[in-house]
Amino acid sequence: MKTLEKILTLFIAIGAVAGAAMMWLDPTGTTWGGEPLLEMLRAKMPWPDVFFRNFVPSGFVLLGLNGITQFGAAFLLFKKHHWAQHAVLACGIILMLWIVLEWWIWGFNAMSNVFFALGLAEAVVALINLEKRL
Image (cartoon, rainbow, N blue to C red; front, side, top):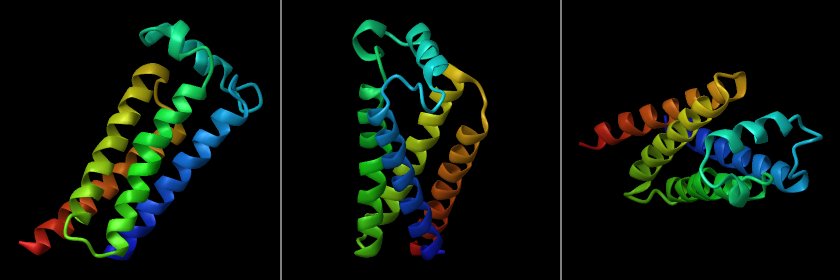
């Protein structure tokens, strides 16, 4: 179960880094079909002229919330730190909340659904491992 947890955590972290890089390399979303998504962000989020002129700020938020935190949790897992399971659980919850926000903005889509399932799996595995410690 702990190997699955490490794989999930690293996969999600790498996905967040790739997503952030995609947003920074093409901040308008033209090459990856993000232009309509940017318009939806501008319509639903506060301060659209400040934070949603392009995807650069979103890339930093994605990296911070789902990239760095997941890498941190993976590091704790590999070090067998006593807080590792709590960190993984928190990361799973953060990812699911991120996806709920995406669903609110863009509606259901395959990639968001997959990442919600990954966050749920991550949280469930962490809870199972935490319960084993009791």
